[in-house]
Image 1 (cartoon, chains in turn yellow, green):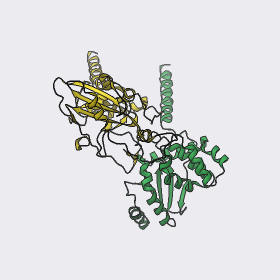
Image 2 (spheres, rainbow over the protein chains, first blue to last red; image 1 turned 90 degrees about the vertical axis):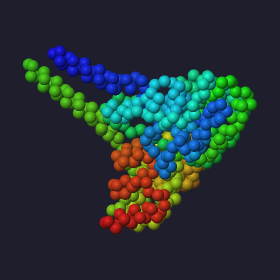
Image 3 (tube, each protein chain N blue to C red; image 1 turned 30 degrees about the vertical axis):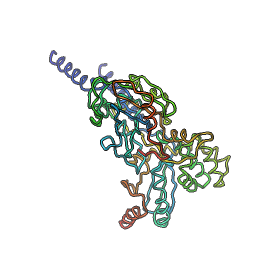
Image 4 (cartoon, each protein chain N blue to C red; image 1 turned 60 degrees about the vertical axis):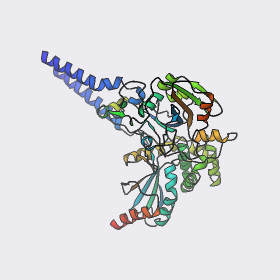
Length: 258
Length: 205
């Protein structure tokens, strides 16, 4: 009887730890990701030097010859050799997760993972590995200053909000792609599930009445904002900030299929 | 008495398990897939395209497929099935509804071509239905009938039936091509590439 109790207890502890620990340490939006695809332009300036996201280590390949109906395997990516243009593919991603994905772990947890996915069944749970340690070293005594907006109108935002809020909430603008479908389904735990996914379209639509080109381009790119992040000891001057917002990469009529 | 209880429990459990299996795997849809076929209706070679009218990749394939259809119209059946990826393409379902409504009046392929040819002018519109109604007008459809058909539940039912069949056929995105039941992996969007594949299939028969 004691042996049975011991075996059952050991099994509970083992499986509880094996499945339970990654479960409780993974945010819900990473455990069971849902389709999303929006963009924002990111600039990170470390002691006056801007990170160039068009460099190879940040760039991902994607299949431009089809519109995938499945969830993108990566929550975040950069592609088409374009600097700044950040693609978010899963709902609920935070700025802290973005930074961690490319090497700055400012939100804790495993440096090399954003958590564990459980949406394809318990037996197929797997880690969401980060891309690598590609962001420059953070200088000692640095502070983080973040601004959102554009060249004509910007504001300073709370750094902690950037790290921990859903980016749509942080920017105060919702993606145009809102699904009514909810990917959490108890049967996912037993039966693997395929999720729908695809990209934002390439297209050159005529503008809506009264819509200026800037708004039109933001809409067809599903752009929810621009973020300029300074990593330095002292608060940046207005000139420095405006200078960075003047260097936003231009939006195109054609964005991507991935 | 004890045995009876065991039998009852087993029976209830068995019925319950069957119920769950039926619930998870059953196909409650009363709708059949569409049969939009261009070319030789009774051909032994059928090329199915699972397409999404708002998909930019499908737009890239459209010119080549038009050439394929013309070149092989006396030899093979070219079938289009709906596979709108609604999470990514908010206007796709409306476009597929428009095509199905046109189909009720015998103008499926005409609407299909218009939707692809002019994808750029409606893909990012907030309210594309008006544009589709203009297309229906341009094609000479009865607009009252079109309006009723495009918004009908039956219309959406057959579109969803196509999508469900697409998943069974292995479509994971658009366009997906199935030649006599076999998925063609990543064909180039050229007449030449499709010709090689189709000629090979015809030669096998």
